[in-house]
Amino acid sequence: MGFRDDFLWGGATAANQFEGGYDEGGKGLSCADMLTNGTGSSPRQITRTLEKGMYYPNHVASDFYHHYKEDIALMAEMGFQVFRMSIAWTRIYPTGMETEPNEEGLKFYDDVFDELKAHGIEPLVTISHYELPFYLTEHYNGWSSRELIDLYVKFCGTIFRRYKDKVKYWLTFNEINCGTLALGNYMSLGILNEGTRSFLEQKDIPQLRYQGMHHQFVASAMAVKLGHEINPDFRIGCMIALMPTYPLTCHPEDMLKFQKQWQDINYYCGDVMVRGEYPHYAKRLWAEQGVSLEITDEDRKILKEGTVDFYSLSYYQTNCVSHSDDQSMTGGNLLAGVKNPYLKASDWGWQIDPDGLRYTLNDLYGRYRIPLMIVENGLGAYDRVEEDGSIHDDYRIAYLKAHIRAMKEAVDDGVDLMGYTPWGCIDIVSASTGEMKKRYGFIYVDSDDFGNGSFKRSKKDSFRWYRKVIRSNGEEL
Ligand code: BG6
Image: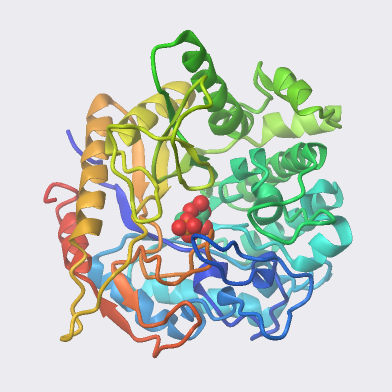
């Protein structure tokens, strides 16, 4: 028993949080480029133009744009077999509207893929990771418009054809189910309703959000179909942010609330993308949200024809739900919830729960029966650089070790798990707060929350530990 022989070990990033070079090589502005910095207590702001005196951390990020050779060499030293990254749509189509792609942008990713190949690392590409061309937000209010389907499929066609012999694994949308939350308006759907300025308090119009997700489902299914036509060996997956909950007590209403949250937030998108049709509880959800979706017969046909090859997920933490409002709350990746008295939390209040990962993997595999891949997991923490330059991140090692153990249990339970790419394998800008000091990496990047620093890379203790894990295919933890 244990992980399969061809298990894919690696790490994950996203262009907007890692790449930088926001105005180089003909790149256009993306939604992430319009987000200012923030902190745990003061939310990021969304500005419609780049404002003087404001700081936009995604513009420079970790500067992978200029460090990719060095970064890939470090990944190879750790033994990575896979590297999850995204292609910035705005490097290929700066506004999304162009009829011809930007050659300089295409060339950049050619260079990155060639470098990966030279080191024997397989790319896993997220096609859209919170980085819609901002032009499409301004002119179409993002995915609320059906026009985005064709613009996205055009982008997919371009990169599928160009990289058909360089990339095999693709994810159509990062954390597509983020759109089930008001927070997902802007990041996930590029919807910016009048009156929104703060990332945390967005003006929400559920009708636009649910219709927007429907457009994404159709676009994803079209991409899957097109990808398989271009190269039948492509493996194209969905990517869902798992926000698992437990019932706080055995009160029957807690149980119902728990079931509803799994359906409405965790299953809703995966059910459509894996099974090719909306689930039985969708009508009730739409009624509760006061939405009425435009779904054509052609849409239904496309959804059926473009189901995904594998299911990928992010997993960071779990929360509880309770029928009673009188409970203490905790923070979380995308979703806050009721505190679990049995769990400890990270510095950002995300509850740490490796057993929840085993439960989640079993639950998802039982539901879908297609291979699963964990494409994000990890601990955002403060790191201290010692005088001699070393970084002793034993807290990160403890977190990852416990989660890999849980994965192994799930595999021994019978779950078909393809791979594991911990998040932010090299330090990157946080999506929720815009901070650099919330670090996930095995590799430290010398830059602070305002982009001050040398951007020099250095190895944390977890670097050496993870190399050992990969070498032993997860046996030596
Ligand atoms: C996921 C996103 O929700 O969580 C990533 O896909 C994000 O983009 C990650 O960075 C961790 O969240 P944060 O807010 O700590 O960066």
